[in-house]
Image: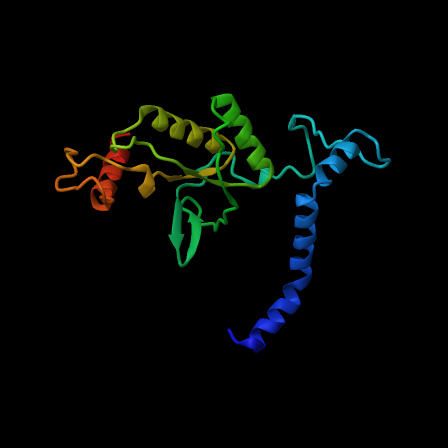
Length: 205
């Protein structure tokens, strides 16, 4: 990128950068918190506290649940054909509006069901559940497996698919004498053994 390409870029992005800088200045200002408190207390006319009530999921023109399937998989498995995702049952193309989640706060099944309904309302049809289903030694964590299953079931009921992202190197720090990582030194990441173990876990669950 030379000077001739940099200048048009900054010329186009300058208003956005300036707005961000102004917001940052207000946020770090020592008077910012005082102003927010005075506004929420009604000291300034025209201000009111933003305190939305719990969503009851009544009929709403902005509820996008109808865009999802009745349940995930209603029209078959998701397949890749000619560079696109399609439903295997009818060959109709599908696009995904995906998010990470759900949060750890959604611990019980009722909370998961509510979270799934809320995501469906916003048009989400795919969640990425990023979390281990094993302990530091790579042994299966039954509670984590149960939670993953509960997430899949809750999301499925609202037409949301689940992508299980179950491995990240820093989650796995086995000991040097681990029985199914022969030759592992206990220091580097034994990726080959880890991947094999992940497939083994999936086959057994």
